[in-house]
Amino acid sequence: MRGTIAAGLLIAACLSTASAASVAQIGRIKSVTGSAAVIRGKTAIPAVAGQLLQAHDVIKTGAGGLIGITFIDNSRFAVGPNSSVALSEFEFDDTTHVGRSLTTINRGTLAVVSGQIAHENKDAMRVRTPTALLAARGTRFVVEVRP
Amino acid sequence: MRLWAALALCAALAGCANGHVALLNDEGGGVGALVVIDPATGAERGQLTQANTRTALRGGQVHARPLKRNFDALLAVMPPPPKVFTLYFIEGTTQITADSAATLEDLRRAIGPTSDVQITGHTDTTGDAAINDKLSLDRATQVRATLVADGLPVADARVTGRGERELRVQTGPGVSEAANRRVEVTVR
Image 1 (cartoon, rainbow over the protein chains, first blue to last red):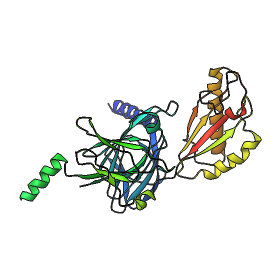
Image 2 (cartoon, rainbow over the protein chains, first blue to last red):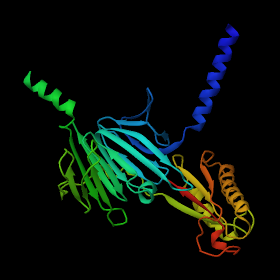
Image 3 (cartoon, rainbow over the protein chains, first blue to last red):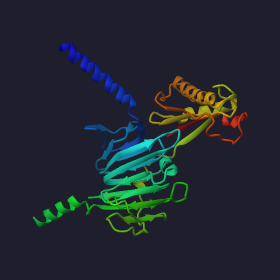
Image 4 (cartoon, rainbow over the protein chains, first blue to last red):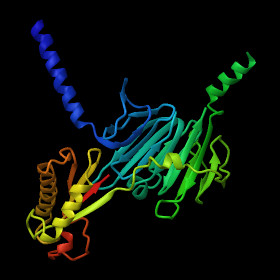
């Protein structure tokens, strides 16, 4: 019985290592000011410059919090204070440049500079707010959601 | 009591969220477009197509108005555009040309502890495509190894070989072209 549990734990450890290695990194935090966190699954990780980001991560900032992010398609974000921004979908093939992304802002402020996803795939870079869906056509814009 | 009921109704409909979007000029000075879509129906509500205009996102058609404020504090934390460094190679090898040594030095200086680095190799059109795919990847891998050996934090940098798919100078097949034998390093 003990041997079975040990083997189970070993398999679980191997699986988690494999899945961690196969999760695609989609971007990186470049700067953090004030209080800010990355929510990954059920875990809140304090945001730090240099941190890698994955699809489904949620960026949260407190009062005075600011974060700068770069993505692998060369798009960039600036997230303002009191914000909740989810990286809901992000797929990008850096050989073919085919890709799509969906970012969900539930509150706060988000400035966006679009990248290769928007430039090479029509209406494939999208931002969702509680009341609208936005499609970027090669551009720089700011979305604000106030409760 | 009535106020709380109204607030609860608002929250349930999410119709009271005070959303706006503002279109700015691109950093190069041009301007793109932003399409506003009804999330329930997929119908287009309109577009912003002029720099420094804004619209509310409450549910009706897009009504573009002039933007009367700036976002300087927010835009101050927008990371700068990525930099691209191009290293050239001696024909058929993974060795950079003497002329590229200075660019390699610039590249070393540009990579910091929070840099996101992507390394993409290319070849000219001499040799067959499969060999060029491998040579381009070998060139990119060699550049990463050189930077890692210098102590730079790029061990996890993405490395891609694009073979002869993306020529810098267009040529026919089987043409030796120095400008096409290269590795492009993007530093974000």
